[in-house]
Length: 330
Image (cartoon, rainbow, N blue to C red; front, top):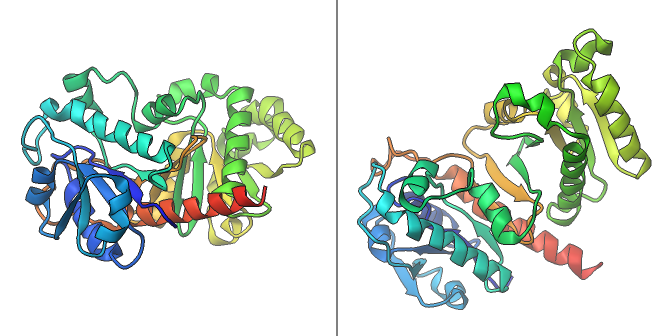
């Protein structure tokens, strides 16, 4: 691979920069990446050697000597562990720069350190619900899909950060269908799965139990899945969510598509809390992130776990390799 991964600064008051240093120490003989951040912030957050670069092309050669940092001046010191809205515009700028590099072919993929949406709203009037929606905006797409990955399981929630009371009305046929199509394409193109089998969870307990616990499955979900099967998709379900995550069940599918946030995230985080990776599907570029937030409460204390960020960088590289191979034979 000829390009490194672009890693955003995230919120410099959180754990992202110190975890970036720990990730470099783990990956310095593996997958190269470079960090778009204020070099003074990075020096304050980690004691690993730094290599200041001027453009992404320098990252590969610099990587084994130190953590490559593409310097982006921030407005204020990070104020570790506390909200610091003065830096909001620069946090956003780091994301925008990374997207530009990936879109221009100067970086293989994008990995994002955690942001704090309250800080961005206070300091920059950030109008997006989160990273995923902002990246969809930058990528010019209307529909993107969140996939959570760990060695034991991949899960996709159809609806994400909305109240449970809104899930039933939000679950339109169009949304479910688009989610399944985007997920299948990502498994083929980015994960190297030749014949993806998708398990779909029911909305209601016991997948409605023949209509006695709700008719969503009978009236809407089953007809939709049958239509998609006739179009060549391999789909199992709708399955009762309480019986689809034990080892024997997981062995039969490549991803579990679930109807709402907790239905998807609880099993994954129970199986492997530390190594989960958040991946955004449906973008014109590859994006991964660690499956945790800024963790202001433990920032700067030397106790943050870098496992999720390490796995996110590794997965970004693997996805980039898979996509390049898939596209080369199409």
